[in-house]
Image (cartoon, rainbow, N blue to C red; front, top):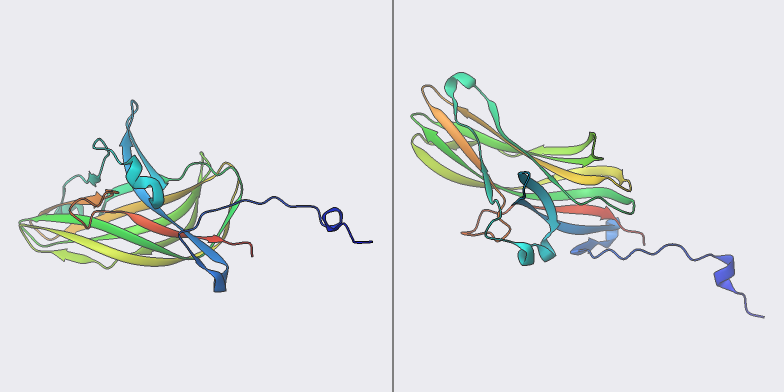
Length: 214
């Protein structure tokens, strides 16, 4: 008499997740997200959309960059930009673990003196009330010559420790731009997040590692 294996081993829940690519050696699947900005009746929202679908959602009314306030040499090193990009709420728990890859683009304008700038990218989770820090990485510091405007790009990686994203939580990617200028100068910066990559070098993307059940 054959064994009824389904009665011995009850069927578990099966969830299909579409990955952009998989690292089977480390049981890791990657989803690439774009950071985007949109405007509604309340104001500007910043969110993460899987890159596989973001182009079909892009709009001429999308916000594609954020400009810092101008700071002077007297202000010293200043965080000019601090933006939070969120996924939608997860309806099933997910596990993050492995190397994440970040593409970040920004622009710096220096007046009357040389300026420096760099970006810090933070991976967090958000439950609607509080943030939990997971990992962060800082780019190289770039120097912008006096009375010029220069665009910069960075490909960064950071290690995400094993982290459970619970039902109702969101993945949050925070982008900071730090700026400084020598005397007697003024500096301002822009952070770019254009999913259509208009003119190239203007997209904010991240490949997030999800734990695969093999």
